[in-house]
Amino acid sequence: MSDEHRERDGSQDTPGAPDDATTPEDAQEGSEATEPAEPDPADDADAHGPAGPSDEPLDPLDLSVPVASIVGPDGGAPPRETSAGSVPGTWPGPGTGSVPAVSAVVPPEPQADREDVAPPDGPPPAGGWRALAGAMRPRANRSQLLAAVLCAALGFALVVQVQQSAQDPLSSARQDDLVRLLDEVTQRSEQLADQVAELSRTRDELQSGTGQAQAAVDLAQERAGTEGILSGRLPAVGPGVEIVVRDPDGLVDAAKMFNVLEELRNAGAEVVELDGVRLVTSTWFRDTDEGIVVDDQVLDSPYRWTVIGDPSTLSPALEIPGGALATLRTAGAEATITQHDEVEVTAVREPPEPQYATPQGPEG
Image 1: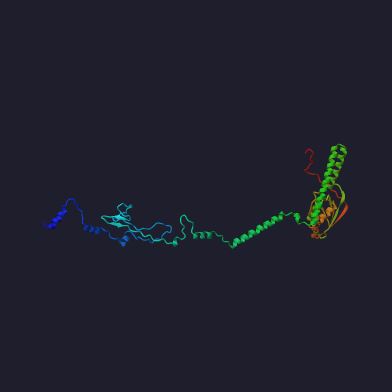
Image 2: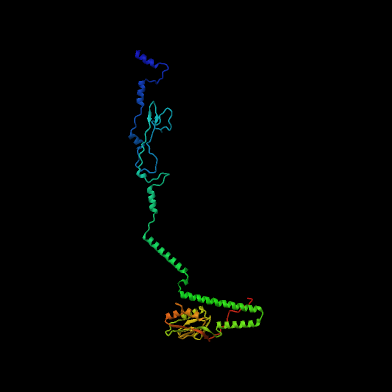
């Protein structure tokens, strides 16, 4: 063998040398042979799709980051952890080389689409508040304004009506009318006081035992006379007034005549006679074709009233503005009133027997 063959054989037969030992030149050539080629973007697009954003619009609230698909050099998944002998972001490959990780480019999110999106823990955006305020702002129209005006007018009318109802009816009366009413009340109070004193004296006489029989007789006669006058069974005499109503055209009706009777009773009249008819508590008035009828008796004009009572009270009560005589004059009749120190009522009537009522004994 030549020296070249001998040297080559000797290198192969050298004991302890590894079979795959290479020279520095071979190692450099091997590293160049095993260095991976740069990936082709077209191949990656065909294999895994484009790494950039897709055609679908991005959700403004989607915070996920689109990344490019990363495949290891052997077609498998990339390693999860880095070992002590590897560099983060690379895959260890066969030989001495390594494959760098493919970087993922995150496209910037459009700021215009996320202006009105509030952060999870932050206040709502200004645009949302403006929309909410605009929705809650009242908008008055013509119908609402008209309804408000009508409600205000109705409330004002109710307040005025309540205030007028709460006013004292005497507040609008004249001073003369108030003085007259005060005099009537005072006189009535004096009359009641006299009756109380008389009844007290009668009680004392009956309880004393002196002349009990005579006192009882006198009391019975007095009561009989009082009851006879009030019931119309007995004639009466006393101070009073005389009223004459002339109505040739028949303008006065039964209601106006009954109003005169009510005014006389309110003024304290004790006995009343009208054209020869004794007027009592059961007296009634009615309009007919023949004229005014009182207790089944037709009246003719002029109508003459004879009344026993206090003349100074009866006359002003009938002459009060808006009173009974004023109503007759307004209807077209002529009415006059004359005061007398003494008038006589001669008309009487027998009261009917009660059909249902019976006297009750002292023990009840």
